[in-house]
Image (cartoon, rainbow, N blue to C red; front, side):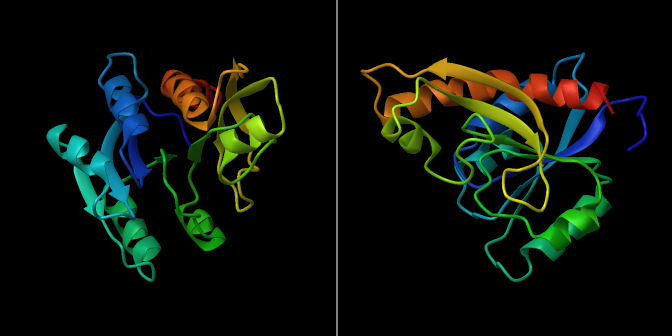
Length: 190
């Protein structure tokens, strides 16, 4: 990807409440932000985060038709000249075909200290294994699930009093904090 003189046109993919989306929109509105969120795409037509995107005057696309989701998304990404995708609580695995066709960076925020605990139920697994720390990782998306180069991580201590829900809240808080920093770090090192 070439260096851009202005902010980079960005799409955010979501599936749920959109708390990381809110954090990214807030960050994108800062003067020194490197991204401009043009589009929010969801595979869940009822995703709560879509309401927030609409209120923020960002174009939204909702689609629950699994068979054409990726093709329709690719058309929109091209139409809006999107140069970066940020996955933020997006609970669908993008196909290798989609990743190749988009051919530009895709970043993801994942609730574990990768390479540990790829996939789902990361905090539950950390507690079950009596880990001392949990955390979040921002990584580049590749065809292999949660295996791309880690850009930034932050950890939180797992207390004896923590349960899955309390740990999820702590990890989500640091996700909101590090996702913008990870985007900055990634884009300034292109």
